[in-house]
Image (cartoon, rainbow, N blue to C red; front, side, top):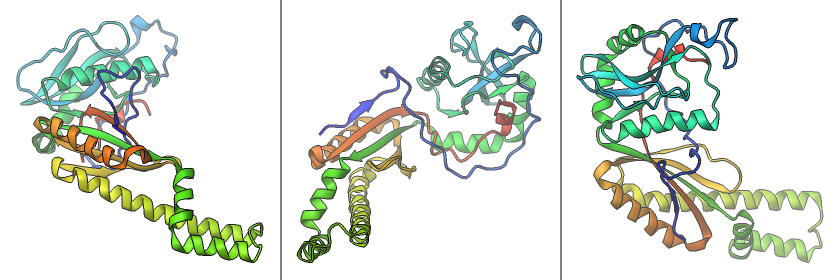
Length: 302
């Protein structure tokens, strides 16, 4: 079957962000901002709360850039750039507090990222990243400038796509019982000796099926990667969730190769027909392929 591709700009809900499991570089950090939770004002009205800066990501830009009054929080705050040389953080003003990861807030965060991506390569920050001042941001941009330049160069004109593949586990188990010679022979022996209901027999059969499922899943995943390897710059495995998912991967694609990658995903999906279900999401900024995280993020609420 053809994969269902969820484009961020078309989705009714925010697609799940791939877990970032890359080893992060240790870099300069600031002291955390003391951030009361949303709804808490430390006895002060919101207008008197300490003002901070919500950071969405880092781009390459020497001149000031504005992205409109689309800042998180629903107050129509302008999204603008804070610079050190030719790198800049994309920020908006906000009271200093913890942002709950509600659907509204998550969509607002992603909308800014999406807007910036239209004209820039962006190193995305985690949701809820808040700092005190523009000067704090400039300080950290300066301290890790070489690393930022290197990452921005590597990620220039590249996009990330996610691919999750699931199967009907019960259907595959029945296939294995018919096709796997070892399992078929063991079942026949159990039937012959009337041992199907014994605890030991069930445990042994279960282990055999689990082993065969794991081997079949690995074989299928290899085939999928083989079909996509030539049209991507890099790929990354993420942890699968549940017993139906066999693949949870991220692919880094040259921006001008998106159509070619789409075609390759469809070709792989058609090869497996209705035996597999493909969920294809993107484009995203390169969450899974950025090996640096600004320790500015320690200023965010954790």
